[in-house]
Image 1 (cartoon, helix red, strand yellow):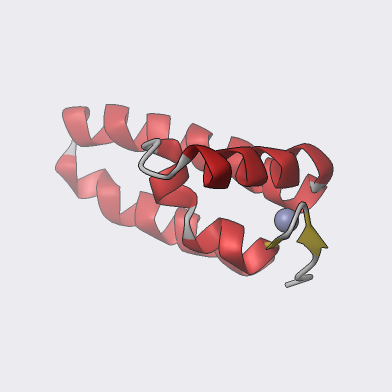
Image 2: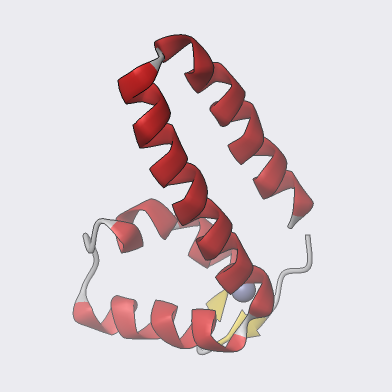
Length: 83
Ligand SMILES: [Zn+2]
């Protein structure tokens, strides 16, 4: 993974606090820093898009079929490894 520092945050910081960011469970200062990083970091913005897509799919899948959720977990792990 190519860890870069943009807007005062490292890619690894973004990935670590990503769940909290999506839930808006972070301070305004942190949120602005994360948004600034995402706007200037292709890797993290692609991760965000992929993550949101998987999250949406996961929600739909879990609703429809619990057995498919294992496959989605593997997909998320693969996505994280690719960064
Ligand atoms: Zn990044």
